Image (cartoon, rainbow, N blue to C red):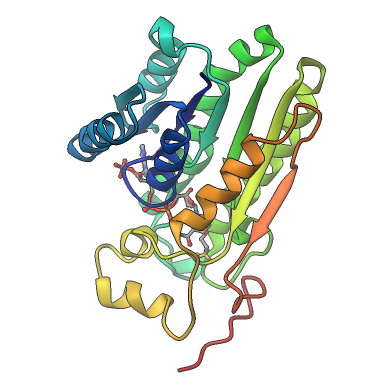
Length: 252
Ligand code: NDP
Ligand code: 8X3
């Protein structure tokens, strides 16, 4: 029975990834700040799929807590086969000269530093076992920097660099490292970005069919289930109507 750890599983991609892997019989570790959602998902996956689910409630920006929780997993969950670094967010959309410095720090602390803490806690076990797979959720925002996306795009460019560096470092230890880079997907992402303004969030996805969380989960599952000698390095997936960060065909 393989074990997967997914950070940020209380909504969106993380929840869909946890659900798909649970439906395929994997042992699941889920994390996030919103405890009630985490416990509801834990219960639902246990009931529906009969799998073991560990729910860890912490803020990934908290360095000591994250390192401590993930370095001291209970024995039956300790051998993590796949780590999915998914927890992340965008805050705001404003020109660099008008940006909110607190928002910048939250994005950097979550998307970059939080991901690094998780890798630091989990990679030594993979190295010792000479086996494992780290899958980082990047973005098309990590391929190009779009107007007013400045710091969010920077964090996703950092995910790209960390993915490449991690792959090189862990190469001698048979650890696979993959980045999965989605374009526009309708989750809570834009609601968070626009501080709960649901109308503004909806507009982001108007006039075309965006990706769904399940689309990303399928790619992660495919990447995680390749034969031992195959590592997907980098996968970009966009809605059919989106070419990249700059071009989207809308019918409104
Ligand atoms: P959601 O807002 O639906 O989910 C984000 C998840 O991250 C939640 O489970 C949230 O949990 C968790 N999270 C955020 N901050 C923290 C924190 N400080 N500590 C722990 N967990 C945290 O968005 P998505 O599912 O869309 O986003 C998932 C990832 O995909 C992000 O890294 C995002 O940048 C990336 N992405 C999204 C795209 C999109 O268009 N939607 C496209 C490309 C990439 P909680 O709030 O409970 O802590
Ligand atoms: C999320 C995709 O285009 O909203 O990473 O930045 S985008």
